[in-house]
Image (cartoon, rainbow, N blue to C red; front, side, top):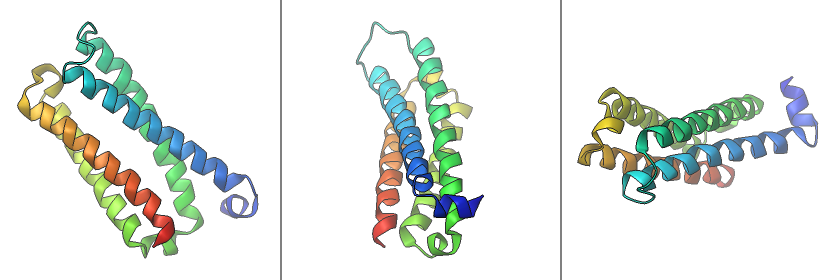
Length: 139
């Protein structure tokens, strides 16, 4: 299967497109929810918007993870030696820890200063993940 990903002219680019689409779903919906929490679209209730946007964000991260794992499988040795890839993986771990803490403390209900800081941190981490992902090709 992995040989087909490398040898077929459309397979790897299709994975990259799926990966980018997943990232767009994830980050776009996180930013949408963050904008609401910070006062934009005040007419939209937070709870229903959160259910919608977090569901789509989860679909996005699932798509990005699945496509990313398949891309990784085509050249694991090269990627493990790449500093940008290593940093990206550490940032993904940080994003997961931040999300787990956010939901464990009920931040969507509290919407306090800590919740807002965690949302901003999440966006910053995801932008850094995207940046590292682009740098992989150049290191």
